[in-house]
Length: 88
Image 1 (cartoon, rainbow, N blue to C red):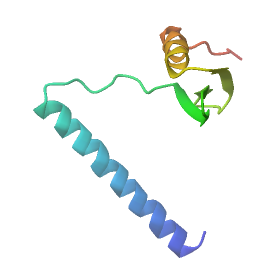
Image 2 (cartoon, rainbow, N blue to C red):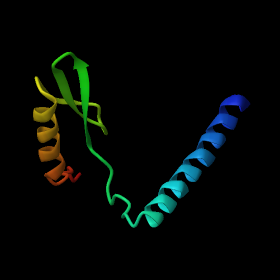
Image 3 (tube, rainbow, N blue to C red):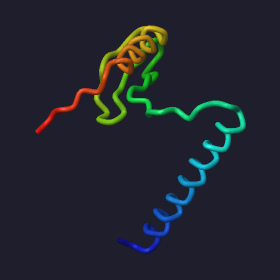
């Protein structure tokens, strides 16, 4: 790998560590707990009155909706479901 790329990767790692430390410090100061898990689904605006729910891990489109509220409700329902993993 080219040295410039390697330097950027190292720099990004340092920035991610600093960002994580800053979020932890903020949560301590505001008496808020850090989220225990990451968000699995995201609502994206594709066009006027068109919202898509996408799974972040795989990038798969789950469904599309005409209103933001419908899309958010669907994404929250998906988040509430347990993660199912295949056992091999």
